[in-house]
Image (tube, rainbow, N blue to C red; front, side):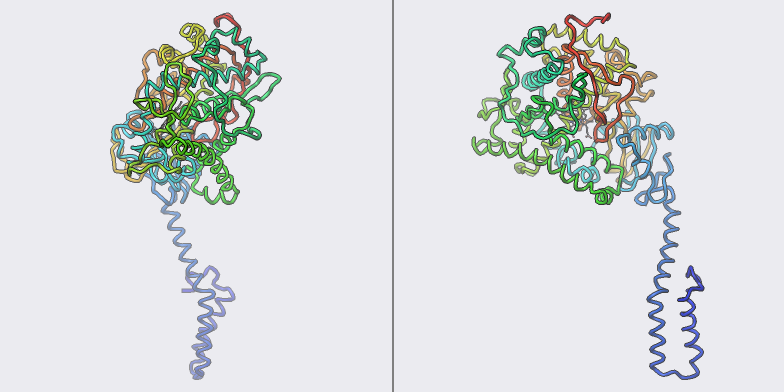
Length: 627
Ligand code: HEM
């Protein structure tokens, strides 16, 4: 035994062991005493225990490791690759974990596109923690997963646990009945009446705050601007007052990490930061009846926002890095994640506690908060007892505080916190990023100047110097086309994933098995020439006014099927409102018009370094081709 497995046959211990055994046999004839025998056996056992047994075990382990290495030479230990599908060869034991976790972060969707080019429309790989992942790209296949056979797929435990610090059990990570009742409850708020009246009013008021800030930067006083811009005349009328800054503003103190005003001398601002503040303020008022007041002083830090951004960045990295617990602990990142999670939760709980206080004061569930939904109403909140026959005057928080969950129970503060944080991500990040990419696209050097000219012509001719409303927005087809075209190339959710609940056959005959993950790159699909034609990489809003119509299964930026984005109308009404008002009043020049901004690390698609632009007041008169 020893000679077979010992890596060091002639070591001191081995020689001693042999001599012990041989001495015991050679001395047999001399009739050793019982004490001698006992002591020799004792020596032998000690030797075996101290040296030989571990060696045998070690040898077994080595052999087993070789066996495992051969067995998992191209795959992760948690799953074997699909022999019937192509895919990149993996590394022993960890499969394709390294490739998927490779830097630069925030570019998983780009790597996925490279693999698609190499392996075709469907490929599989294995990743530690995730198991076997099937990458798909055909619109019919994605439509099948999201709509046709919806119940055979779910977000699943992996998704939920990875993103728990941010989504908890909220709508984005919930499955089954828990998802269904949240969807039902939230759906009540997203209706035309709400868009036409309350939300449109808030969007205009918040856009005006952006304009006020830009006026300050461009050294144009509000009074002179109000005189010169016919769009601003609505501000002085009682039907559309500026936002009342006396409504409760959550405490926003200390210094911003990313400043909105990058260079006061040359009037360079980070437009992405401004859009984040705009969407946060708007959603605070619309969703929770809270005016965060970020746009009243955009230079002030919003601690919640910084923590939220870091958290989404950190959590997005966990998807492809199974060792995150270890590395987070090693680098101390776990403490940062915990601190950011606390900041985000505190922010949410503060809002909830204020509502609970109102509830107690009024004796009405949720505080009975209603918004003035009359045409041109000020949209401010108040604890008004219901005079409304439908839900359209309630905000999201009121709806959820009144609702009962799938078990018929009222929501706890923790569930309300989950709702709030989920909707903040949906309501703040996605639209702000889409707006940033749109302003980048329409102003970059590679885009035809005609796009901006047409956009301004439409805004000027439809609005006639007035404010955008729900009705004018329906007529602003080119502006809407620019927004959709932006989301085709820069989808706010660039990649998505589902867990297979039961064996299924995808269109084209590809089988997927229970427990596998299927993923699709929205970013890659938006640039696929097979889907969008040879000019797929071009920013050409006209495609939405000719052949391509929305909704369509090939445009998956807002998702498809029962879980399709609840806020898509909300998003484009908001985006068109602020775009129109900004382009009516200002000219923008990218600091770097030639290079694409670097993608930030997140669950969504931010620009890593924001969007630095120079702003100047737009010269009077309609935008002309000569200008
Ligand atoms: C440009 C803006 C937006 C884009 C591109 C976008 C995109 C998406 C996508 C891709 C999903 C599916 C996520 C998934 O299930 O994996 C989604 C879901 C959702 N979106 Fe949006 N979204 C946008 C804006 C908004 C806004 C402004 C709101 C709310 C005010 C919103 C509310 C939601 C909600 C509640 C869901 C979850 C639906 C469900 O699971 O049933 N979204 N969105």
